[in-house]
Length: 457
Image (tube, rainbow, N blue to C red; front, side, top):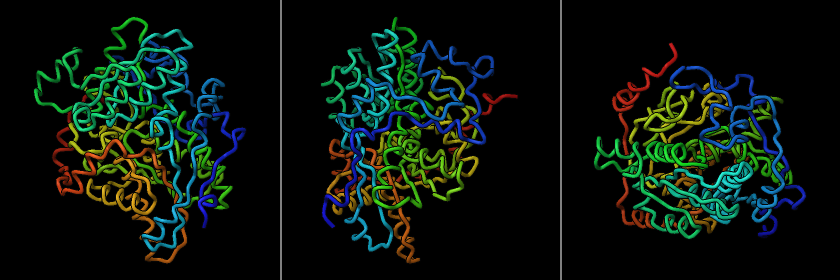
């Protein structure tokens, strides 16, 4: 099979003009986010002090299935979209599986990941509102890089709080953000009240997405004409990322196949929702039977071992209360190299879909993810990000099941980013210096005690 035959691109005029909002089609809508003081459902205007107003409206929109992509954003999408859909013949051969494996290659964006799909519209809406400064958090640095680039495109100043352990593990991500003009601070830091409080309590705290979110939100709320932006978890982020699955739908038609399974790694839900939700609407509306599998790290297992509760999205308790599967907002994740997956909670849409059994979740040990990443690199020539390797590991599990049963299933997974700036992690794996992290039931239960007092009586 020639290279030309196994890669599918859309012509420019077929790049989607609308994002897909799955909330409109869900039979059981997500529960509303709550004001932590009053425990009353939030209105869009309650979020205006933190986010751009249009993003607040998108966040709570449960009626419009299709939301138009601004032309300025769509023009920027054309710089790198459509991203290719690739038939992974090399991986199929390496596994000896009858499964047909496809991957959507989001690593070809200018910043090397899917994160730019939401960074561009978020910064665009801030610019349209006259905002001059934006702030955010980042784990592995993929979102921080995307946000920093988008801020430069639209002429806005960006400040990024990067989880401290990732700041130290991934110095080149920091360099990328600084190259685009962003100010990057390791979190927790002494630059905010939230950071000071955390470091006072835990002087050697290596950071989490929860700590970094607290610092970024505080900066946005205390800085004139500044808004906060978020790279995952929230509904409007999944909305923007739906361009991945909408393109993949058309590309799978070009390939003459339809997925039996759609798989993506899972941190907060942005790339999982992005590739899954457009296909999931056919399950909801037409009764199709595609399986949707979220692959999370075993050391941060909110979907597989967490509890569905109202919880804060950050460690300091600055955010609204979100109805989600959570390990507790004070959860301190292990220092795995998949920094983008080290978040304590799941997005509210995904949480409701999991609760309703419209999707499933698996947990992946760190060593299995790197083993899968290296096999994929050797078979397909692309070194995947440690986050994406979790999706590859879940794909390999399913492909091996097909090998056992002889079933010719069609599997689609999202390659959310490349790992060329994560080579220190691969160095450590190849040297035998990485390990798996075990989380006991007692640790999870202890951490969830803080969440009990937040529930609506």
